[in-house]
Length: 115
Length: 118
Image (spheres, rainbow over the protein chains, first blue to last red):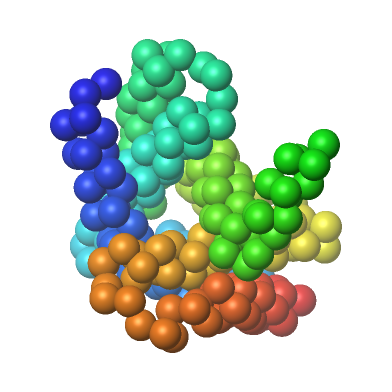
């Protein structure tokens, strides 16, 4: 992997961290508030269904977390395991695709619920 | 043997432990993500499907595990903000206190969750 790609991944890691700094703080606030009196599917769906602002928030959040988590795991695997770089890079690419797909699928499902 | 003890001693300071917590929480949270997304996508099958799972989370043991996850998320957030401050802001003396601050804020968020969950 070239130094250029490593630099790009470092930048993506920091850029996604900055997005997540805000998104995770909002997410923690929502969780702490929502858990009062128990979480129900109805509450979750009611908040997201047809709400474009929450939809946009979670689309960006899911993408940022997928990129951040995958690059972070790549760094840990490269620094702390003897696994070949090519294998680690393949795992990273697969992981980012799987996480974005699963995240966006959940967000789209909740946003368009019942349609 | 002596070298091992020297390495252990050199690592036994708050910023090294902050590094360990950040790494460990990052890996655990990433591994948790597919399960989290899967559970949320249960709503696609209908409200009852997601509610069936959410009922299971009423179990006190699950709530305790959730509290652990919240603390991990808060610790990764506050530890990450500390790293961003170190990397992108000019050095200030208050940055030395950020390990303690991030630990305190993480536990406080965990307790807040716990108080609301029960």
